[in-house]
Image 1 (cartoon, rainbow, N blue to C red):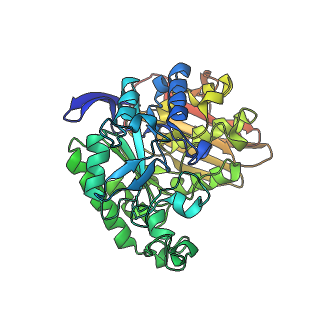
Image 2 (image 1 turned 90 degrees about the horizontal axis):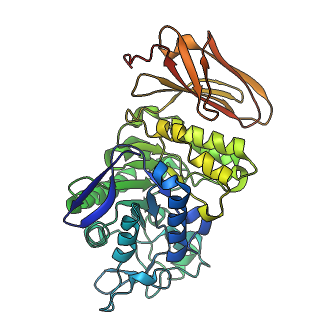
Image 3 (image 1 turned 135 degrees about the vertical axis):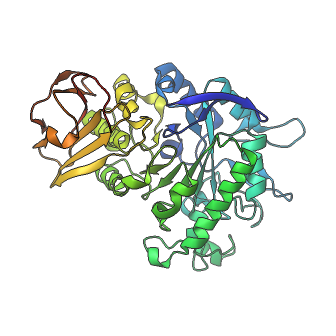
Amino acid sequence: MAIAGMSGAYGQAAARPTGTPPMGWNPWNAFRTEVTEAKILAVAQALKQTGLAEAGYRFIDVDDGWWLQRNAQHRLIVRTSMFPSAVMPDGTTSLRPFVDRLHSMGLLAGLYTDIGRNACSQAWDPQSPNLPQGSVAEREIGSMDHQAQDMRLIFGAWNFDAIKVDACGLADFGPDKPAVKNGTYRALGPYIVRGQVSADQTAKVEALYASLKREIDTVRPQHDTALAICTWGEADVVRWGNRYGTSWRTSPDIEPTWKSMLANFDTAAAHPELAGPGHFNDPDMLELGNGEFDADHLDAARAHLSLWAMLNAPLILGSDITRWSPALVAVAGNREVIALDQDPLARQAVVVERNGDGEVLLKSLQDGSRAVALVNRGDAPLHLSLPTSKLGLHGSLVTRDLWTHKEQPAGAAISADLLPRQTLLLRVREASGGKRQR
């Protein structure tokens, strides 16, 4: 990940995001709201010890569950049972000590909020022990009606580097919801009707994210923050997400299955024209280490990372790194694959061929070379081939397998016999090594 150190009015930061996709770790898929400061710091230390932080995985995100309530002065109160370091001598709470700790480790810090009044856990995890507490108003911990105050707190006083902004508050608290009917929450909207784009109040959704982005930039005019928009592909986000977001979710939440991974990949792959430096389609977090991408399914894990790298997608790990095998660390830490994702040209791959379970992706890189992925999406072996004449390169060509790190001359076509759920990922350059017009 390309980074640049800086210091300023808000204190010394370890490194700030630039124009390449964010890389890091988020606790949601591993722990949901059952997370603690100790668990997060243990993963942060594991990223350092395994070399994954040095490889680029530097963002440590805090997801849903961190808040206790919003007090009478509308200030967000931290759940100190989760973050003991948040207890201040004057009785207030602050995540600044936690952020400073991450920065001292050379890492970056990200936080979670919702664009509505309430968060996803309040709609989807009603049995969680870490839901906001207090009155109806005190449990409204989302950013709606508090954008300026919250962004001053998060990016100013607390000095975070990134924020993930969910949208359950706009979708899941309509007047028909049981928790709204019984008075647990106030009704809002819905501005988003899941799966019914024509029913969404898209202009209102966009306006809320646009306003939030303005408030962030007011606090941090250096534009040194990352904003992840999370409307799961709803509210026509592919039309407007790149105006405000570093990334925008194109799909529902990923699950640790091959089927879910491919479905999410397809939603992002459909819009290569939207991506570019500082703005990226986001098919959700990596499931490396979970389910069908664990240490017993390394071909699938390699394919998963290969596809995300071809998309220039954010590379956010989502499992408990402290339990990883060396083989999983080697997959996630493959510097040559990461380099595709972090290529400064930031040109997303295009699908040049799709035939049954076979798929071929082509991506242009800043140095004039090309990345090629031959993908077996199915559960049976297959043969795939791509004529080298389609690469836009000239003369003798050399291919480098980014998983085996072997080079060989290219013939008239790039071909491979692929096992089920296997992806061949190559970097192809002209043998002369000269940089040509992209």
